Every structure is written in structure tokens, then in C-alpha cells.
Amino acid sequence: MKTQTKAKAQSKTQYVAITTDVQEVNQQVEKAYTLMVDAAKELLKRFDVAKFRTYALMDHTKNEQNTNLVKEFICYHWNITLSMSPKDAKMYIFIDLGEEALQKFGSTLTNNLLRECYQLTQSNDNTGGIEYSLRVNYTPAEQLHNFYYRRVVEGETGYVSIATVEKEAA
Image 1: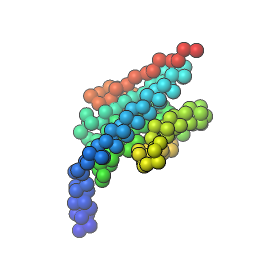
Image 2: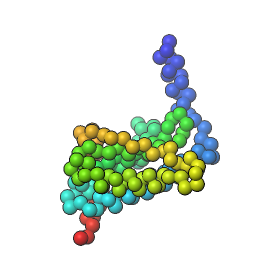
Image 3: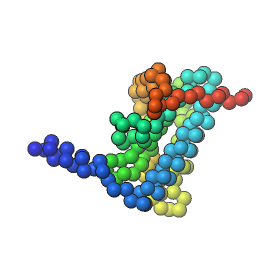
Image 4: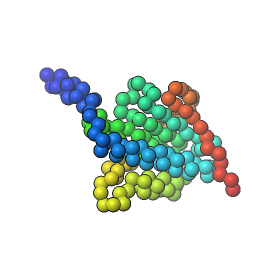
């Protein structure tokens, strides 16, 4: 009996009416996500090894299997995901920090990214703004790297593109 109730409750939350206010806030969150990805790509330019400059972009709106994910950026160092909550139709940005990248390269690289991300979501007018949307997670190395390498090895698809940023001139 409880299982049926849960199933009904879940099916109700899949179709949430999106108000104009939520749409406007979601546009701000998506813009912040795009700027975070741009900042992440810029930070990758400092590496000599192509493996550390390679990333995959996923447009989950083109993949029918993912209903809550919108866009995703993954590289050796981080995974930045834009998703939509099925409960309230609000967008969220999840940043998964990789353990190995922190151990291998120190915290400066990750701190630079996080500083940019917090600045992009910060409310400058003492309102809630989109500060709610940023979620930072610590991910064990094997989890992040397995996902990263799988995306790169599987190659490009209808919703996955792979690129390598050019090394920054010395």
C-alpha cells in the first residue's frame, strides 16, 4: 500500500507548473552555470598535458533517459551539473570536486573555480537571488574519473561533445 502511495506522489511531482518568477530565476541560474563552465575551461588552459585540458559537455535535454538533468560539464578535475528539481521546477548547479585533482594539484585551482562560482551566484541586493542554487560536493576520485573517462572513451554522441582547450601561451 505504501509503495502505491509513493508512486502516486512521485508522478504528481513530475509535472510542476512553472511560474514566470521561477522561469526568470531559472534563466539566471542557467546563465550562471554557463559562466561557471567558461571559467572552468579557462582554468584548464594552464595544464601542459591534454588529459587535464580535455572536457565533455552533455546536453541532457537531447537525452530522453535523463529527466532532471539539463546540462553537464565534466573534466579531470570537476563535474558541474545543471539540473531541475522535479518538486519545484527550480534549477540547481551541482559542483563535484575530485579528490585526486586536489591531492595532485593542490587546492588553488579548485579554489579559483569555487571563488568564481560563489561570486556568480551571490546576491548583491540582500535578496535570496540564486544563492540557493549552488551545491558543492566532494567526490571520491574513482567516481569522478570513471565517469569522465567513460564519457571520453565512448566519444561524441547526439548529446555529448568532447573538446580540449588550447594550452595557455607561456
